[in-house]
Image (cartoon, rainbow, N blue to C red; front, side):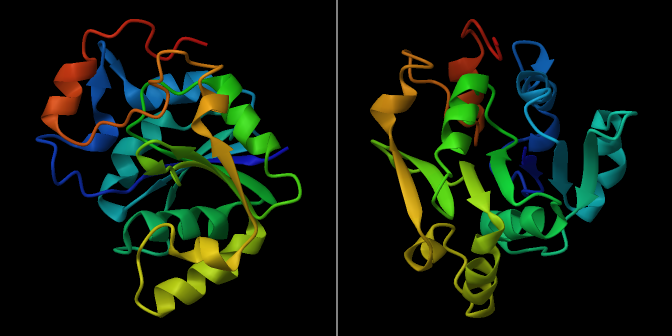
Amino acid sequence: MATGIILAGGASMRMPGDKAFMEVGGRRVLNIQLEVIAGLFDEVLIVSNSRRMERLCEFESPSGGVRVVEEPVAGKGPLGGILSGLMLSSSEENFVLACDMPFIKREAIAFVLAGLSGYDTCLPRTPKGLEPLHAAYRMTCRSAIESQIEAGNLRVTGFLEQVAVNYVPWERLLQFDPAGRLLTNINEPEDMRRVATDEGIGRL
């Protein structure tokens, strides 16, 4: 199977609280995500920074299916988070997910992961651009990302020019969520207010 990687190491600069522990509809987004992806991966890694490690341990599963791990590549933004996840993963195939997406769909994740066949990475192409934090990556991406970071370029999609990419059209993902919310992320208080009354959060 594959490894699921949830990135929870961001600085939460635009949110008043700690983004990794935010709630939507009375539920923590991380709990929603773990429920949605349960059984989909061989292992799930919650990649965190050092200051969050102890608090995030509550999300670990006794069976070891969910592990909280400290990012080995710190201070390099989402690109460093992706690389950290790949460095810590034990799988050739991986799915990277940002911790601020409350409307993810299990079927959509499985669809993107299946699109990795024959490619190094598979990610959605939306009207707003590419979504690298709801995307599948092979281990073959690791060297390209490492080289980019070493060159001082932290643009999260910069390495895509060096690997084989399968771009998933937005229209294909709408079959799993006609309302088009599955890639919604919460970056600031206004985003939180907008989604607070939405129904079906985390519905399987």
